[in-house]
Image (tube, rainbow, N blue to C red; front, side, top):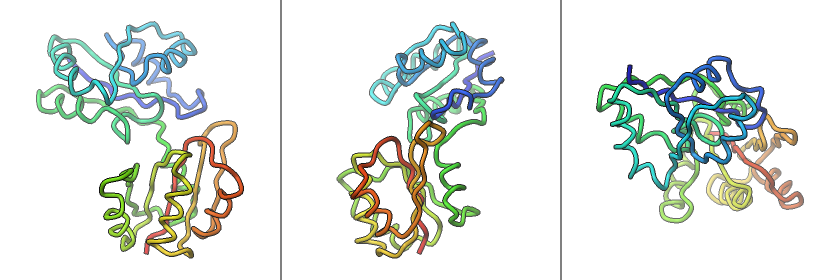
Length: 222
């Protein structure tokens, strides 16, 4: 029966993978991966030999119709990304949306995603929060920051190591230097680290220690 499985993959530690996820990847007709070179390492580790094809942000608009036809032919697909849960700041939304439009069953497995452990580790209120993902790099960035300056809920951001200092500096500018923030990097990996304090204090930390790795920033609400 036609079915799309959305399968979270480890964000660092390969042990953060469920027995069910391994079974699904072994049983489906096809795996769609963000980067087949990256995912091959995971497949090799778990001895999974299912055929794999590329599905990423640069080709998903062009290929989504083909995969819908594949599913409508009674096939099953597992969608994975390089790390974490597909469609959360990663490719996946378009394929899920088209499956829903075509009455194709979608089953998203629970699993790894970076912002949950970062949010819980932050020590900031997490019963209600706003997930922002990546801020706009250019157009709309300042407008978004002005809006978020008034947000009362805890906010969660993804950021690259190349823009961490810029983002923290803009938080000082728009939210004030005393707003509390927690910055986690390399979650579940060997050099995992969380730095907490005021925005000014955490920015000062990264002024002396160059940011490296993948970052999640958790910012206190107004």
